[in-house]
Length: 214
Ligand code: SF4
Image 1 (cartoon, rainbow, N blue to C red):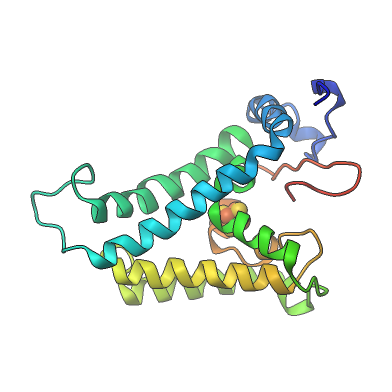
Image 2 (cartoon, protein in one colour):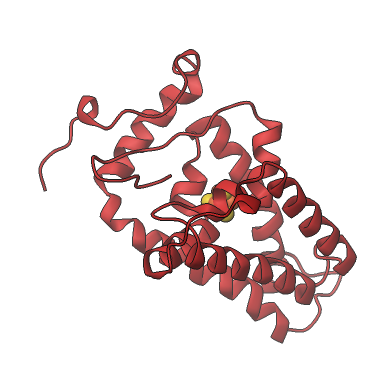
């Protein structure tokens, strides 16, 4: 594989005034690394997807944790910690330090919707999905749904809410968009939170033919 020089990388789509931010200076070499190894990303995506499914499904078959259990000796607590103690902080931290590296590299939902899109119908993204209020509605629905079911405390509720959200991401990816993550752009409730907490703009890597992140 020919060596890719940093300066030959496709331009990152970051507004000029934000290019001087220290977070963007960190993001550039990280992007360069993953751009060089982009063909291996599918392995990371596959691992994250399997981990996501295992973290949701296995606790359904385990006993309820006792007071003495911890995330290090009880898988149900570990899965809960992975979802709430790692996933969300990592999304936020990735935005601060490395642009949207979580979304492009590690997020199992983003990867699943992208893979579904490759095999999917690729229909034009409808106006209702492009409506700027859609992520707000999505965020509110998932939050209310999660709170109603007690998503933080019950493995079954966590499986229903996260699994349902994953299923919806796959369906939206399968039906809409052409080489775009329609789910991520227009419906992801997690990204809606991040986007409104941090003013940092998202980053993207483009090849000559098409986007490889989004
Ligand atoms: S926008 Fe949401 S679903 Fe898409 S990659 Fe980011 S966190 Fe994952």
